[in-house]
Image 1 (cartoon, rainbow, N blue to C red):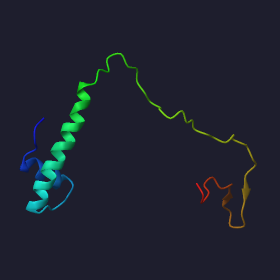
Image 2 (image 1 turned 45 degrees about the vertical axis):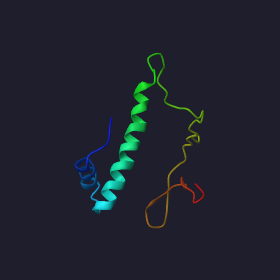
Image 3 (image 1 turned 30 degrees about the vertical axis):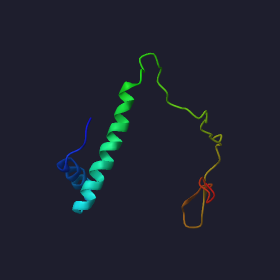
Length: 89
């Protein structure tokens, strides 16, 4: 891809609402150019015969069984329900 221009870096900084010093502009111009060159290497990977991947870790969602319980009211007239979130989660 080549290197980014100073205007490219200033445009990204403006989108991120950042104020950059001249030294930072040069630094980020070099760094962002390297990142874009590295990511552009992905276009060289042959993915024609690969299927879509939506899950790579094998983990599955764990849900508790729904249990129908009769509603109960507190003294103030609000519905009382069991906690679904714990501090350790």
